[in-house]
Length: 333
Image 1: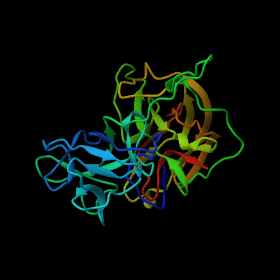
Image 2: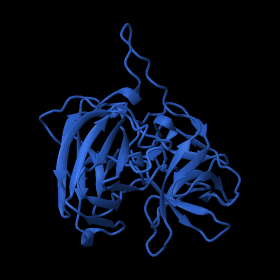
Image 3: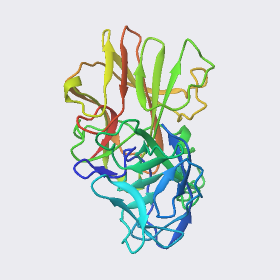
């Protein structure tokens, strides 16, 4: 998970179930999202997506520090926070491999890839580089070291995570602001009732129109057990955004619902997971934050929520935690 004041490897919010490493475990990385491909390395230890570079291997220790196959410590170089591995460097701690192999730093699974101008390759950062265009959000996935799934109890087996619904609502609620711990959506998938069998794949944007709904997957860490989670929607004014933007028209009415299963890149309108519970219908407007629902954190599980409308709402925004944060999050307290 992530504390907003401390920028960590960006998103996801940090959104995956994390595991503390008791011994070294090694893996390769691949990128998905705004840019896809294996993570390779230059001879000097720069980690890049694409460009036909030799694939890098990374080993994680009990402190969450990474080293590469040449035993170089992997760091975030100031001031740009570029992710690279240097000879003699002490590894930056706080990395974790979560459910599905998602790589995070201090609980945030969102990264930025920025073009190098060298053979179509992209450098990897925690935040967009000031003055550089073409940066996109990506997620990094390890091919090893993910935590083992917990066995179902006996004699009554627990349903799989994709069929579990969030627990019942609780009276307490967390802030509708990223002032403490929070989860960034691990996956956003738009579905279109006008094209019910077409899978649009994953997106970096949240979109709500009379025909398009968006599904958001959240990975809740096991460390959130016993805590309260609040589903919040943050909608700042356009003038408050630094690295995002939105288009908005219509009534502003949005239906927030939890689903019985999760989405993936093949999800379409016709195979969207069944509705679990209508949480709220809220008329949103720029300059406001909304606490949609609060519940006991479903620790160690992946849960999904859908945003839709039956009115004239047309909203499209780039999900972003940079000031001012915009979009759907789960805050934890």
